[in-house]
Image 1 (cartoon, rainbow, N blue to C red):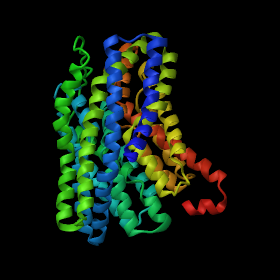
Image 2 (cartoon, rainbow, N blue to C red; image 1 turned 180 degrees about the vertical axis):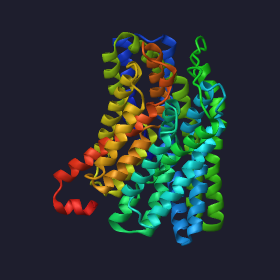
Image 3 (spheres, helix red, strand yellow; image 1 turned 60 degrees about the horizontal axis):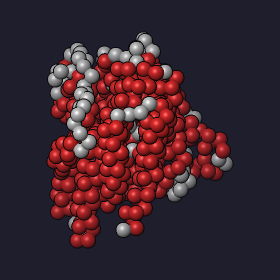
Length: 493
């Protein structure tokens, strides 16, 4: 019970700023529709309860399963098992990621079905699995992460040169969506389990991170190949419908009926992996076995409640706020976007998981509050850049992405290796459920409320949100190096 209360307080403190921000907008900037505001408040309560249950479920089920799988894969001491397990596990966990489902349905909608949702999910999941495999092999063969990242993202940049602007935005959005609240805890635990068993000391500390970033690049590659096979893609419409007159509670019941079975299907592959692995390999004690199964139930219930609150309560409120701000003032829109990004990233489930793991792995030398604040600043800047991109004619996504990733690669030269791994992982996890829903809807509202917005601006937000935290964490690492004595620096090199 104490664990539940502690987790509940933590979640309330992360989501409360978002609620207060919307209320300030309602009472100070422009009043929202009464029904819309009521749905937002109900959705907020569901988000708090759902996120609390989900994070508890992650702690006692998904994370232990990832660690068990990672340890037993390495203990096999057979490269073909590492390769096969990496591809299979990466594929399974990515198919189950709800953020990817949200993006895939948006893509199918705006392309008029020319690109099917399952085509997107399968393509991204295959690329995700292949790069999970590469990440595990990198740990086993002691390939430096900064070299792997430079090569992989360099290849991704070359592949994107053959894509139209809209598909580049979708590809990078897919990378952020594939690394969400479900995949990140599992991948972090998998990488940590492999690194802890195969290496020791500071090498294991560094190798505990980086697998998420590599897997995200696989998602980009998956969309690149899908685009090359599909040919030219035309964005036909906004991909959303407003639902006036639906009442306050009806949208929640509709979401519950849909998400209950969807969440079960998403978690089922991981449950099957655990049951089969436990039968033949793990052989956990009865008490641990029951605890992990209970954790899966918590994770399922938390997922359903959290996504119900976000989809039925957050989306319309975010879209309406974006429309109102874009029609009033670009400066006000940018300022509000920064504050929105600064606070909402703290409510992302995967961010909470990552900051906890950073603090645990580094024995508290890198505090979760410091990392969280740095991420908040990075995401706030990302939303400002996105507003500028939408409201400025001729300003395209690659004008941000290309110099941004070049800067990130250059900063790797001066940044401690541990911070490079943390930075690229942080960029991937910052674009989770709230970014894929509330902030995405907010961005849609700006695109259709601003004078320069166009259909091509519907995608690209997640790509920018995934970029700026990398640079922010790398700068933090450089400052950390400058303020540390030589002995402390060596301990992280």
